Image (tube, rainbow, N blue to C red; front, side):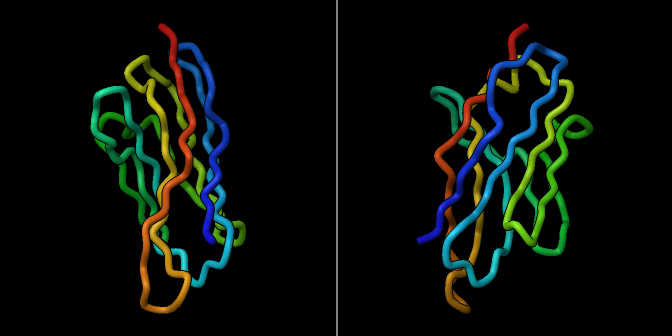
Length: 120
């Protein structure tokens, strides 16, 4: 059984910083990609940042230059460093992973979500 456990959300003033962490645990054969999504009330879940197994990163335009995604392969952990936070960044942030528990079988897993609130 694979689990993704997030931590690091909270309340911060505009211009402040937060770092989210997500640990993937369980019987993992191959961790392919990890990423962070966010979703607000009545909105679709949207990709914030992603990182591939070889370290390539991608970001949505609104967070480029402010957010940084990185990972620790040895710990199956992905981080999202969020700087210069804005009220529009307020959402529930979800960790996502595409991985294989056996060779050739890829599934997508989600964390439980962590609330990020940015006050103006």
